Structures are given as C-alpha cells and as structure tokens.
Image 1 (cartoon, rainbow, N blue to C red):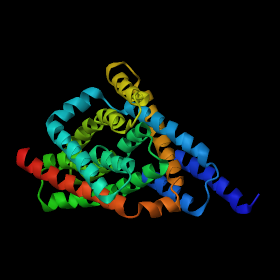
Image 2 (image 1 turned 135 degrees about the vertical axis):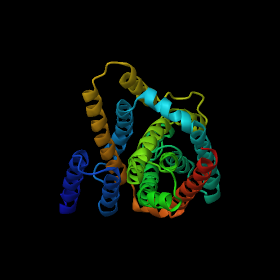
Image 3 (image 1 turned 180 degrees about the horizontal axis):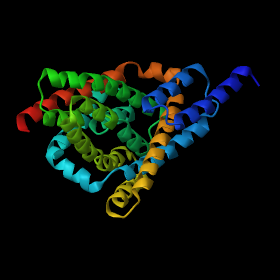
Length: 310
C-alpha cells in the first residue's frame, strides 16, 4: 500500500476522534474536512456519504432535547411577525438571486434556509429533506460560518455606534445572525438583557425549522406523486415535547444534547471531506455573494423594522 494512502487513512480516523472529542467547534471541523479533501483523496467516500445522511438526522433529533416548547412559544410572541417577515423575505430574495446568478437550486435553498432561520442547524435539517449533495451542504455551511464569524465581531460595534437599547440589540441579533452560538456571543458582549432577549427569541426562531422542512419537501418533490415523510423532523418535534411536558431527567437531556452536538461536529467534518477541488471551482464566488447579499439585506431591513415598530 502506498505510504500516502496509509497516511490519509490514519489521519482520517484521527480527525474523526478529534471531532468527537469536544475540543473543536463546528466551523473548525468543517475547515479541517475541507483542508483534508483538498490535500488527500477520500479513502472512504461512499461510506462517509451514507454516514452523513444518518448522522445529520440523528443530531437534529437529539438537539430537540435541548429545547422547551413553552419557552420558545412564549419568546416568539414579541418577534413573531418580524421573524415571519424575515423568513419570507430571505427565501423569496434567495430564490430570485439564485436564478439571477444561475446557481444550483438546492444550493440556493440551503443558503437561503441557513440565512432565514438558524444557520447550520437549518441547513442540517433541510439538506436530507431535499436530498442535497454533500458538496452543496459543505459550501452552504462554509458561507454561513464565515458570515457568522463576521457578525460576532461586527454587531456589538454597530449596536454601540447606533446606541441601540439592550432590547433592540437582543431582538436584532436573534433575527439577523445565523447560528445560535454567534447570536449568544454577540448579545453577551452587548449586555445581560440583550443576551436574555436574544436567546429566547432565537429559541423560538429555531422552531421554524419544522414548517421550513415541510415547505422544502413540497418545493423539491419534483415529478414524484408521493411526498416522503421527513420522519426525523417529526421526531425532533417529539423530542421537544418530551423535554417540555414529561418528567424527563434534565441530566439526561443535557447528555443527549451534548452527544448530538458532538455528532453534528463530526458530521460537518465528514461533509467537509466531500468537497472536491472541482466543485469549489465550479461554484466560484457566487455562493458567497448570494449569502452575503441575503445577510446584509435581512440585517438592514430587520433593524429598520425593529427601530420603527418595536
């Protein structure tokens, strides 16, 4: 066996263990996967592709045990119409820009979904439903994670510059920043009240993953007469209901959520390893332009709406 082939296999399993260790987060795992794919030929491409399909679904279900339905619904009252407006605007604009840029329809939908709701979690939930390619998932996640990193640093500065109140900043960050981790980070830097508001509104926003997934099925069912049931989305909902309305042990909920996050990190590493050089060249700069445009539009429009009506 060629030494490079042996090295690629050993490194692949080392990085899997590293992804599960809890020492790295999702963006780093995705970056490691992409770096691996650009240097080595994937030794287990087919197995990895199948694993991604199942791991994504399992991780999404497990994350439901970290949510409370009553808290999410209560938090969603203030920002319900703002959330609905931002989701409809993002998906509509994404569809139009995707056509303009002549981007793949599924990649466009992943980018739009990630921007509309909660970044990587929405992409993870929608991807199996529309049968997205791993390469498209990887590109969409990479774009979202880059924009998240920018938002984490930029939003507190803009908030201070505009002298936004704690309430306004918390609401704005929950609507305009993709992933929950970046929302929490930005809001925490701004103040405790902003953090409390941002966390609860973001929690409510995450529930929109369910109707978005059902909408995605209708959008991408194509010529098939039957709509395939997204069983994992319903199990995600059941997990939330169990965690909220049954005497389910909190320690077990925390453990399941922790394991699910680790599986999601592993999944993002595997998704990164599927990104080929040819796919990167074929996608070009257009996905980043689309993702950035959607993010800028939703950030500005939601801020104006908040300042005018809240």
